[in-house]
Image (cartoon, rainbow, N blue to C red; front, side, top):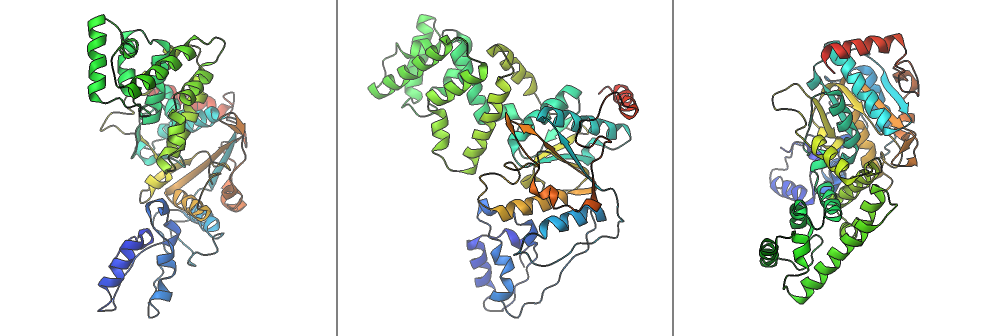
Length: 434
């Protein structure tokens, strides 16, 4: 017997067929509409072609859904129906029609995040537990604006299967470069030097770093200043000299925004080239996180202000044991369920992704994301994100009009605080201390 058969890779499939060769018996449970792990080697064709490989197969369709309401299932069925290769099935429920899918548009990501958090606060004020609400997004870089809105509103949250935006490797690396650029001759930049002196590799090992530490200690200098005075191997010495020169040159530039300075550092030091040379999904995610950080940096005038903000926002995203809103990617959400689900950034080029290698899997992700909701699903999108215009995801248009509404009373606009409903919400949030 094999469960989650839609997730098997080639080696697992061959292994299972070999095990069943003698008896001719193989019992598989799976849902091809939830096959979302091709990047891990899973091949949905093993499930879809099962009757061809095993002609005597008996198929049992388990179409009753015990989790979601009819409106949610009708929307999910409609989106997945555009996959021509899927195994035909239609989910139904006895839970009743329930609430329609909420679809709301905003101008900017910050407005979107603020509105989602305020709606979470409103629902919490009506008695919905925070752990019964989840924000599920396509790319983990999208968590940054949501995290900041939650922190600002003092709504406890937890990121499932990931760390907060400011704890991600590429973000910490970029902030370390800014620290080095701002204070190359001060000891406060030493930890940043230890982190970035050999990223990308410059031939600096533990021995070389130890020599720099001794030189810095003897001369009362920063590690960055001591690096150019320490006797190292010729290759390493030249590479480090170039690295320190880049830091000093960019640090002396005038008239640049903080975002432009960060971009210059990432390019000139070879950090972005290092990520571009790696075609893994992890490297692509790190590049996306850097793009988000560069956009954020544009809003700060001084490096210290950005670093202070990162230090505060990078604190613990909620204390253990507290009732917290759940944040996660669509991939992490598989198998979970929540009474209320918020699905931000349903925009072309983000979902489905502009560089997606598997459009069919993007559609299956939409199906998985929608079916995490038990009672209420809310989809949002923006007109502008990361400095460019965007348009609603094609998946939104595929949801039947009878199953969705543009709610919160204001269609494509952020809810206005002057409305009576939102004055009441403000009072409820103030009572909760949010």
